[in-house]
Picture 1 (cartoon, rainbow, N blue to C red):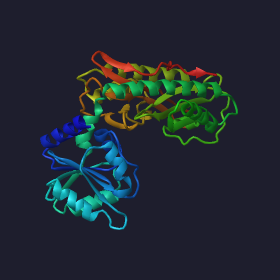
Picture 2: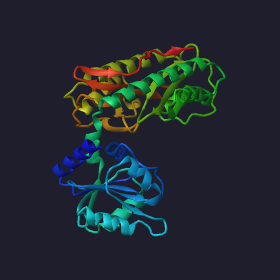
Picture 3: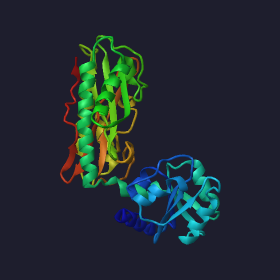
Picture 4: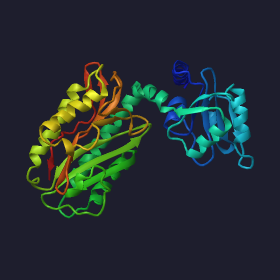
Length: 360
């Protein structure tokens, strides 16, 4: 904890930020290695360049003290948090802080509480400070990501084994969730898009039944420990639809181009551009509807964003997805997704599954 807190405080000093306020969630987890159960009771990690402490509801204080060695200001339901927050700000020398960074994902009422206690503050988002700190994963995080990727591979194989005409998207999603649960992972998402539904990148998995000739998009992920998985593969019920093979080849070439572009020193936007150029050259630029990838760690979507215009310089230890796609409305969609850890010599792909369409 002390090392990460010191990293945040150094970043605050460099950015001339006087106070950071983080709610229970990924940012607090990264700094402390713990956060209490989030609910409607205000809980804030308050950090200055020289000090730190926690505003904590009384019912969570004992567990927080067992996990975290920082000063704490507790408050009871009957009293409310205002007086405890004022005392915390006074003790930390932050009552007059102006340059204040608030957790991007904290509850709006927590943010309003902080701003009312800091009437002269000029609020900004803490992600600008936290994002660069969290992008490079340590060895434990990388090991966790590899373990999660292996579980996701097994879950994907279970989906492939369950594919047959008449099976519903929901039944295939449950096949993946069952494996995740068996392996001790908590399912986060199970997108299954059959036939025309595959052309919706974030299709809501439902009761649609698979038919002979359907292409099927399967995008699944789950969390075990502090990190998670994310993988997308394609299947076909029997023979894929007309034109499928050509489009799949374009998406595979786009993956390969992005992997080749993902090198230390490159910009995230360069990776997106490499994938997009392949798709555009094949005449499908308008059907590539999203960025090429996103970072992964404590959150399944976090910086770096592998997107057009992103100037983030890639460095070893960063973890992100590469997932170009082409979506042909009314026909089918194709997305192929890998999670990679960037090494000195290029990306380490975590999945062991082929990206070829699985015809079943």
